[in-house]
Image (tube, rainbow, N blue to C red; front, side):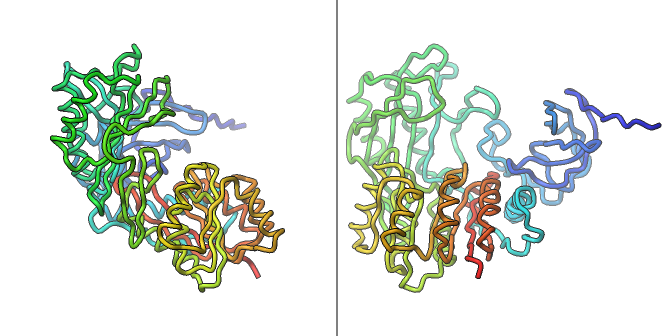
Length: 460
């Protein structure tokens, strides 16, 4: 009798594999003796000699030792610190192939997490950027010291080693200039930076956001204590060297946490907010306000939401997870009425102010969960024709999914930043809804992230 013994993969083991596809984190995926092997930096069709770096019950992780057969889509990453930084995952793949890969990542999620037999023909080609560089309107860099010099950047992947970033080619040039100038000012004024191990020092993180259309810049110093030595001199130097900075803010975070912001925020100089516009809409951005990081693609994304909603002018719309009301207001001119909700009260205040500022009398926002407000409105005789959801990476709240299935609007437009949770949620909604199409949008070129707009139509 032949007894098959399972081949075990060991750390340090080397072997040759062929990469079949890209995984959700942008890594190459191959198989060795039926074991899944994830290989960062490897591309589909490549034959690579790898060394196992980590083993798990269901898969292994490995690094490239040698590329025996190279993909024709492979390019040299233009960023000199690409492999050290870890902020991008796909600079070594030519851009049109990145768009194909992101569509495939969405397809993989639906094949893995749903019962649909054929979904591929409903997933459209990914909408990309004409110029996929310098697109980010916000830099959020940790501050540290190296050889007594102030540095700022990101931690290297899977480590606590801070990589100094002088020129990030996915950040807008203005945010890069401001970052480098502020580092020099901190150096010149000898203002101490935060030491995580000792929990001493002052400047912990620098956050810089630019309004692309207005040119206004906000600079946030996140500090480990309230007092900033030579604070007035620091502010004056920023204003002198960087006149485009219209808002200088301090946020205090003295906790041992990976969260960037603490609870206390106050303005040191200038305005509390900066202005940004999307299409015909303008928004006020405070230091902690959520706003899409790629304004160019945000317009394309929101236009796809509008297209999916296919409004008649008589539709009642619910904007769940509404934030400051950006998506709802984008749809407001084609709707009879928009009602939105969010659990963050400050966002609801901003959303109502934004609606009022733009003269939309048909849009109103309330604090709380959709699963509370929706049944209440239906009981009062107000039923939505369209529900738009734009949840966090964790997907829709289970109660919200159940509430939508009870309320049964004609259409659901699902905006997602995580294909896996999207697929799981749509599998639940498919009881009463058909997927008309899924439209991927590339919000973050050269990374593995992909955003989608899915149109769901109630079954007859």
